[in-house]
Length: 319
Image (cartoon, rainbow, N blue to C red; front, side, top):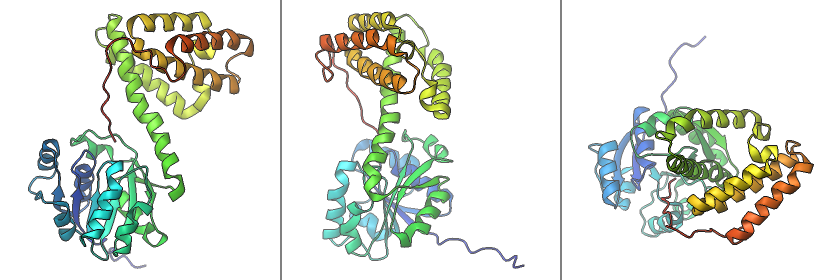
């Protein structure tokens, strides 16, 4: 039996184009695995500060210079900016043959990297299914985090190795399934943040001093139950068919937080449909409930109406 140690994977010089919340965290994780961050690019003041904090002593340079210095380049820019970035890098000759070019967009597979592939780059799509804060905690959260991977067959082993080195779990996503995959994650994670933030605001208006303490155990249990049991975990007045309670909710929301009414009605209608389909909501109770929801939607201005009569809420996007 051969007990000689296995050879270590090649150590790579790593560059980051786009020092948002994701890129520096992934570069730090790769650094902990033995790779070497050599260059980072960032435009905004926040990006420059983040790069200095997360990747100290790594030079801040323009994107073309990042590619000139790195064997593995992380393209961590917003989804809508990715196609033009790739085209620009390829057209200016910044891409080197044999260079690993990795983007972290959930929306795209590797086709968006075709201009760079034609210049000789090796394309990988590695999307961490995680929310990022832009702080050191992100590196710790990568442990056990699933990555949605899309890659050519000949690069599958390389893609898996990189994800595992960052502490993640590889999950293969077909090229054509990337938009649906990303929509599913956004539906669950991004909308959850909005729902929780609205819930905390309403609890404060109701006089709860520490809404986070109240919601933490409840939402933790609800999430655990949902992950374990799916629709069977549905509880509450909609699943029970308590039309009077739902009507009271709508009335109170319309009075104190009109901007939340449309979202409440949309989620309540979806919950009712799923509860009905899974036999949790009794058909004889559903009629009154759906009537309340339809009346609420009509008064709000239809399913797409916002019902906003007060201040507008501003939402900051995140990856």
